Length: 376
Image (cartoon, rainbow, N blue to C red; front, side):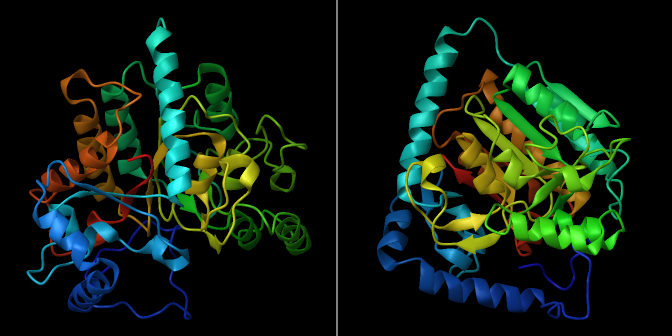
């Protein structure tokens, strides 16, 4: 969906190779978004949206396989207007999972009603030193600081404090309702570690074989002094002392049932291997999806997440996420947020972004990559 004119994204997230498809023009992107809208949005829904106030309309998609990667908010009508102008947008693996998320939200509401204090939000930004092969993200650190100022009683872990061990220890001890990551997202940490010399080829192959069935992707954390990537396993390193990544397969084993919202402001955080059925024991019902970070959060018990469809730009993402949190907490609103609130706040943040450079309504690269997954 990115146009040929879009600026280079952060190194380490999307490195060009000779096998990469050629960049497409903005005109080609717009043409494809128009055709997709004709195919994916039925006339009955178009009629319903035309008769509904955009400020109250929310559409939740339950896509199948590759359709999970469609930027539904950017689908263009015949007047070149994106769908987000008519409604807020969210996605779920299935309608059964949406019902499951509503149940989680109700339990979080019940807990919040009797709580004596608000659990502090956790904000993680620009870990240092980054794992090998990944660059520093200056605007991600600024994003984390701004988000932490707006979230109630937030704790931020920045630079060398943002180790996987520190993040997981905070999650386990403080049970935050909001978790925000502003860092690199990597679709295959094992391959990155192999290519940078941190893992021998034989060990990398053994790890890939051992976890071939599990969730893919990971969030970069600060490189620990005693880095042992081969031990990145719940049994070998239960406290995450020796890993430089929060891998999706391990996030899914954490208890995050207290968390209302997880945000992965990182490249490709919604991408993963397509699969028809995800473990029924964790999500309650079979459904299809992309087996990556977004499903890891659901598996861990999070009611909803904000994740990304493609490599994102560091500065532009910081602008959008800052505006998103301003909308989330407008009027003193606190987590757990009511249903539809998160999707509508992301929509409002996008509108505000369109008045700021480098955002434009015509190029979805800067805004349509962020999606709400789970409870809207």
